Image (tube, rainbow, N blue to C red; front, side, top):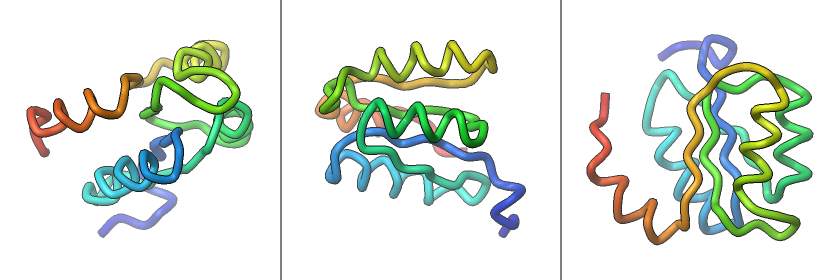
Length: 100
């Protein structure tokens, strides 16, 4: 198992239930470590603090939308993978994502 500092950070943004599912999927991959945020403001603070390799965000957030998170990622300047969708769609589609 890689050390935490060698793992790629994945920002998971959503409510408790959404983040719980996101975090479980991220933690299932040895090379990834989740970073949790509850809203756009927390996500922006996490992005400013340390870089992430990917972002998974719910669309509806208490202080905005997942698109606001995506815009914050774009402002950070580093290209990375982003997933933003209604959680019911993400849950349905996640089974088609191949595990590596």
